[in-house]
Length: 283
Image (cartoon, rainbow, N blue to C red):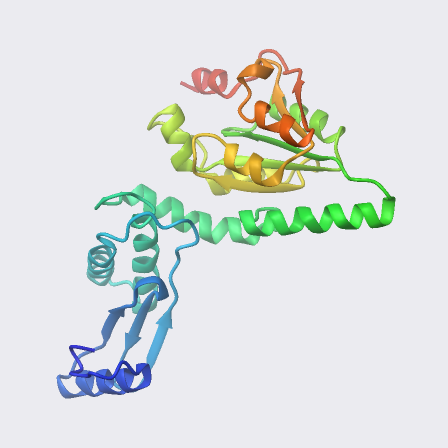
């Protein structure tokens, strides 16, 4: 509004004024950041919206505008089409606002996020937390109405980095005991925080795709935290599954499960099968 010399915060009037500025000064376009609404691309004859890519919780917006400018500039230098440049800038800003303080983003972070958007969103089993909670509620209500009893909702979690026979067997055994099995998958950033900068070997989009291909898996949800405790408390599953290499007292969420009458089941693991051993063998 300052650039257009406007006191009245009318969006239509702003668009018209900015179009005139583009034409008057022979500019190619104006790219205007709009906070939570994304970026607006204004030329001499049109104004086009590029909605924000932020789908997770926003922690700190510091540096988001600078990130947009930097990413947009780099994209233009690389001769990317303006549409792709604006989408990429939006994506980069969405990564930054999920972190506390002014933090730069790496090329790998941007590539992984871009990959996850182009891959995960095409998989029906991968859903957001709100979608999952609605789906579970609908499933429980429908099951009670049609079967006359409460369904058994199962929950498990893990990194599932290089899915192997041990994982497949574990998930099959868990699914046999429930009506629906939810798998919470550690995001790439979560895996790095837990296992170090060299992990994951396989990105979150590909790990999710492999899990979704298994008949034993009904729903997949990604989470960024170190543990899925928040998800467990929200979903309130009837059975929480972990491998028998754990003890019940060491299972995250075991104490909380008692609050709604749920239980923890330890599934026997297949000996000699582990991602660490596969990585070691490859190395």
